[in-house]
Length: 357
Image 1 (cartoon, rainbow, N blue to C red):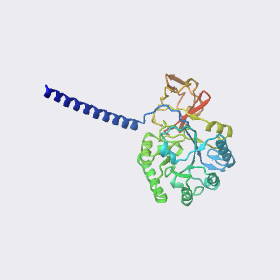
Image 2: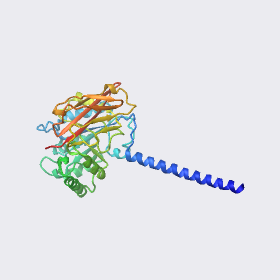
Image 3: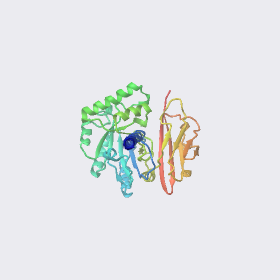
Image 4: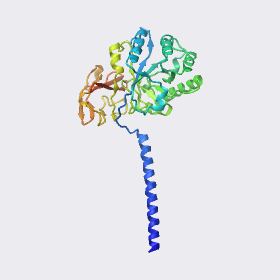
């Protein structure tokens, strides 16, 4: 009887240890899968709103230019609205931390000379942090900054350099090996001139495919597109949205509306592939979180047929579907959705790249 009891205790002890080990392994695997799948949950994230600029006081290019006096007024609007400027270095530290206050991130694409000569002195004086995205092939050419100027800026603690490819080509049009060679060339030039390859990347023209995005994810920590929206904890680090600011869409009333926007968070968006080859128009759907209220108030606009019109939407519970009228005709197709959530305006946008014949 004593022997049986001792054996039973040993068996029970062994079983308990086995179960405990199994639970530990299960929890570890669950955490690993959660990190791998980037499991999302609804939050009250006020978000980071990124603004994209290019040229300053270059009137010949209204689609990428902003007047410096207007830029200063935009900065004043941001400050009068009690928003603070986001330091890009904090992306690496607290991207997955809920933002209890809205932040504004300034980004500058292409490193045009007009930025260095006109906007940079003002940003330096005002101590406003920003990311300067550089395409390495153009540097030193007429109309662009030089490496000495980039190095001068890079020494400042408010300036962060980003990679914008080598050629600034339409990357989706390149063969896979040519695309990889383009990025490798840029990386080597950055290392030669700055001693490192930046952690930030910006897709030229905001265009990318899953193949391009996956390769960028292996070489950088964050990448930005040109689709509009507000960055929140549930956004993909390699599909970060920005609002383009230029003469055409830069009036001050619109600007005030933009900077007040908050994220319209979603759980999933389909299709994940943003490069349309044969599936044009795509079967488009967005799954929102159950906690998101007032979805009946959502409005979407899309530019299929190369004409902006209100989208034909329908809901299946918390999943929004868009039935496109026709194909996207231009090389980039866009969708913008906004929601009046009890007086808080929320927004997200999507950009597709369309294969050209």
